[in-house]
Length: 271
Image (tube, rainbow, N blue to C red; front, side, top):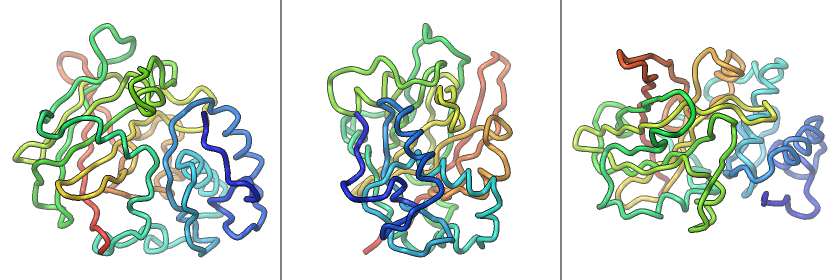
């Protein structure tokens, strides 16, 4: 089930805190109806048009959809980089605003390895290896022991065939997994290339969540594929840049497996 909006709030609460009506409210209703049981995350709006405190519970998919739409319309292009994203040296006030982060704790970190298989050999789709390295806030020092949880859609754009073990095993589908970075900060997921949602409102993407030893979980920008559906200049301008950019270029190995590299720069923590 989708998380309902709180009673009395406008349709697009993330863009219009305080009750101001938005021209995007009808689109939000549309995406909510079309989503079925797609997973949600909470995130704060980074729109420069309205400088108000973030709402505590919003749908991150709708946030990205709204931001991409605004950027494409030209409404968001006047924002400076400083307004669009906070400095990597300054903690984000909404760093831990994240619905679905609980899924990362469904595995014991000590039992995880630096690589995991999300999609078995019989899973339909084009094989893909997503790998990268996790760096400290300085962007230079590799970090060992960081747990990364990933999940994505199948070739039909659905989070399908989940298990009844937990809320997130049901909602995230079967294509999910956990890794723990090695001494060089490296990780890898062997899987398939995901497809966009059936309603075609979002690009194909891989969700990533990270948890450093002794810290709380947060999400980083989704992995999306440069030059593909909806990954354009407008999308690039609307990125949150959590953990750095999630836009990657696909390559291919000699075995025909697609390759994607998503390095992650850890976020500074508040407090």
